[in-house]
Image 1 (tube, rainbow, N blue to C red):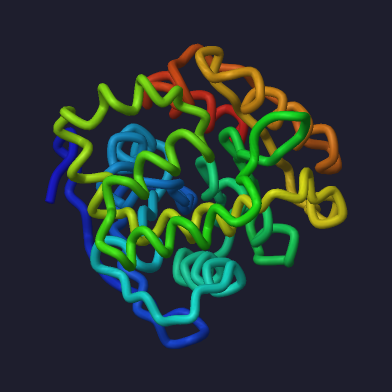
Image 2: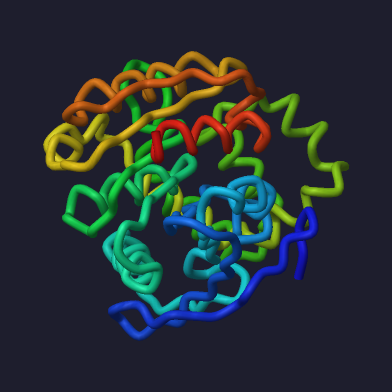
Length: 267
């Protein structure tokens, strides 16, 4: 298994509830765990992982319900926090933690609960920090109902419009894209991402418990509500810094993001 010439070692770890969580690792240096967001598994975070291997021993994993990982029910956000804890334990002392989107929220919650990490990097955690953004009440249940009825395409479209904020006409154009089948294949996990995000606003009480050096990042190409959420998140985590990087909609190219993470986490 290679990405940019990188050789990955694949293994798994048992989470607290016994679920097998698959991961891959490569590189040299202090450990860093990458926590993906919606429509992500370890293959989609691999380009960033490959760009980090010169400075870190990178751990990329399949969140539960994705790729080669198990999916023990019933779902609870706490189980995913325990998955992060198990992987950080496997990574060893001095590990850093990076999360993207809903994965940034999981990473933040893990750090807030005292999972031992040396540094934390959060990319656009989709909290509702203003009048826009965040998941709408009842969305997780609607997504689960659509998937249970075999209507995966509708679940993907609903998530993109109601959780991500993609205009409906743009979603229509996406249905013919090659990646649509990939997204539909992960539709059963969208209720998980929605549950992680929640809809009650910025959880300041949890975020203020984070006691490790933290950087919150956003992309110059993202919508204002995501960028506002990044600023608000950095504002409530003690001592956190905020950094905007040149990028597209809810993403920054690995060649831009990797050096920024290296500088922020390793100095």
